Structures are given as C-alpha cells and as structure tokens.
Length: 440
Image (cartoon, rainbow, N blue to C red; front, side, top):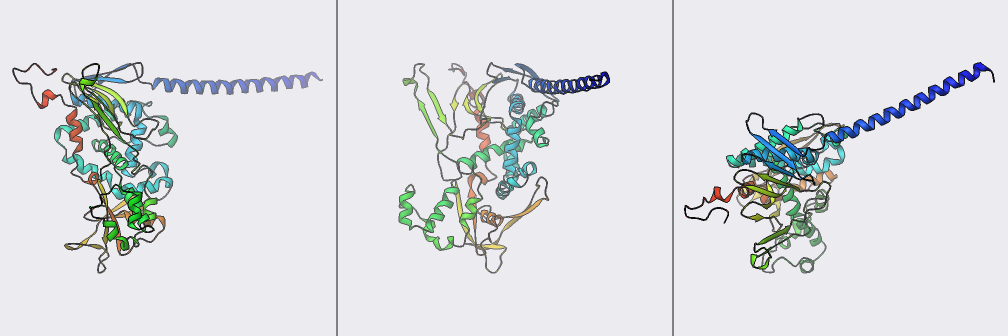
C-alpha cells in the first residue's frame, strides 16, 4: 500500500476517534451537569428564611426522611415557611391543581384538557374563591397572604426553583395568590361530595326502570321522603342526561369510603385517647398530603398539610388532635328548570319568570385560538346541562339542569375552622388564675 494512502487513512482514523471521544465527553459532561443541577436543587437539611420586609427569621430543619420542622416567631411566619417548603417540594403539583380548579389546563396542554376546563368554568370556582376570600376574617386572610408570600419567595429564588415539568412544557410560573389557597378545599369537596354524579345516574336509570326497581338498586333513600324524580319523570326526557354525565371529569364524585375512630384513654397503654381516620383520597404520586411540623412560641402543630394551603388538616397541637373524613352527606342537588316559553333568556320560578344570570368565559388553548363559552346560572346554581352542547348535542330548549351545592356558596367560611384548630387553646380560653396551667 502506498505510503501516502496509509497516511491518509491514519489521519481519517484519528479524526474519527477524536470525534467519538469529543461526543462522549460532551454526553458525559451534559449528564454530569444535569445530575449536579438536580442535586443542587435538593432541599438543605437546615435552612434559615428571612421574610421580605420583616426582621424575623424562620428556621427550617429536615429529618432523615426529609420531613420539615418549621420554627417561627409567629403563626403567620410559620405559614410563610410552610408555603416555602411546599413550593420547594411540590410546586408543580400545586400549580397543576390550581389550573385544574380555575379551568386553565388548556393553556398548558391544549385541546385534550378543554372538556375539563369547560366544566370548571361552568362551576366558576376561580371567581368563587375570590368572593370567599373577601368574606374571611382578617387573621385568616393574613395567614393566606403569608403562605402565598412563602410560595412566591421560593418560586423566585433562582433557576433551580422550577421543576423539570415546567421546562418540558415550556411554561412559566405565575405568582401564587392568597385566593389560590382556597381552591384545594373546593376540589376536595367536588371529589368527595359530588353526589350529583349519582343523581345523574339515577335519572338515567329511571328512564328504563320503574321506581320500585330503582329502590332495590339504591335503597338508602327513606321510603317516607318525597321522591322528586318520580314526579319529574316526563321532564327527564327533555334533558341530555347521558351527555352531561359524560362531561364530568373522572375525579368528580370519586368517593369510595371513609372512616374514623377514637379510643378512650381507659383502653390505651398510655392512658391518653387515640384518634385515627382515613379520608380515602386516591393514591397518587406525589401524595395529596404533606407531613410537616410548625412550631411557634405558643403552639406546635404536627400532621398532614395539603400543598397549596397553610393549614395542618389532619394532626394535633399540644391539646387536641383532629382528622377529616367524608360523611357521604347529600350536599349537592340537581334542579330541573323550565325555560320561559315567552322568553328563552329566562326560566320559571314560583314567583314568576326570572332571567338567567349570564357570564362570558374565554379559555386560552395552547396552539389554537381561544374558545369562548357562555355560562348560565339560575337561583339554584350553574346550568350544567349546557355542557351537552360541547358534545355536539342540541341542548334542551324547554328544560335545563342546574347544580346547587353547599361548596358553591360564596359565604363558605370553612377555612376559619381550619385556622381555629391551629390556635393554642390558651388563645381561645385563657387559663383561670387558679388553674394548673395549659398543659394539664
């Protein structure tokens, strides 16, 4: 083989080997940098937070399992610290739930989530929590603001604050608002007390079965109570029940079971009472719950919080323990409304014709033009039968179906109860001068 040809082959081989080595080096460097980036984003075992505009410091320590203890001078500072660690560990989970509740998933996921957004916009939870927030007491509002400040403090703390999901979707983070903290409870209400899903199913069965057979399948309703569906059976044929049922998100009314129990101190080795409960939320990764401890000079709260809210919802303080469990109470009802034949923009009530309340919703859809929808409401609540229109079904012209539920009322002040549990009993009932002290 000529010398010149051998030299050329060696040069090509060297360049190929150099190219392969360079490619391997770049791959290793990229993987190493990525792993370092992930490692750098891990929570520190000890962290001191300083609230912007305040001269208070908050100490966050984590045990071997990564569970945080937040030591703060006030309850509001503790809420700030809890918001920070929630965002540190669960920011995308919180953001996803917030968008689900507000009907804004399509901004991230496009048309596949449009059905869910339409349902949520019909319920109007986003506007509802804004009204609810304004009705809460000043201390509860302050705690919600402090929590939101903590979430935003972490979310703006640096490039590692946002998790990989944000980069994969090429989306950013909008500042957390105090009102956003109230959406979690509404979503849990919708999941655990969405008994109107059962009512829709019963109404569909009533088209094919006599009431006596329906009582065999669902015998819980008292025999002496009024059976409204039996009297309204003819009107059911005017409503697209199957199409409405198909538009309900999977998690609506996804109730399975719930239980709780208490043992007296007479039956325990410690002599202290024991409380246990299981809210039976569905398994998920990440979990719906977040274990934490919040310590202030007046109280120590320990238990399960929910990312997105500042409260310990299942846990104990120095005096009492508490839990939450679903009672299967009937807190949602469907109402058949008759449209005014003389005015299709109104419906009939015992007091005469009343106009539908109407609001316009614009849903942003990723990669597509925004989608406009009109939401109608009656004195009972939002008209959910209009959802059938989006299943390419003609909505009933003479009857509509509206939803009334306790959790759709703006005067819902249940966050006050969660806040009250976080108080020391000394703050609610100060000890009498001759008492043995708050620890007794």
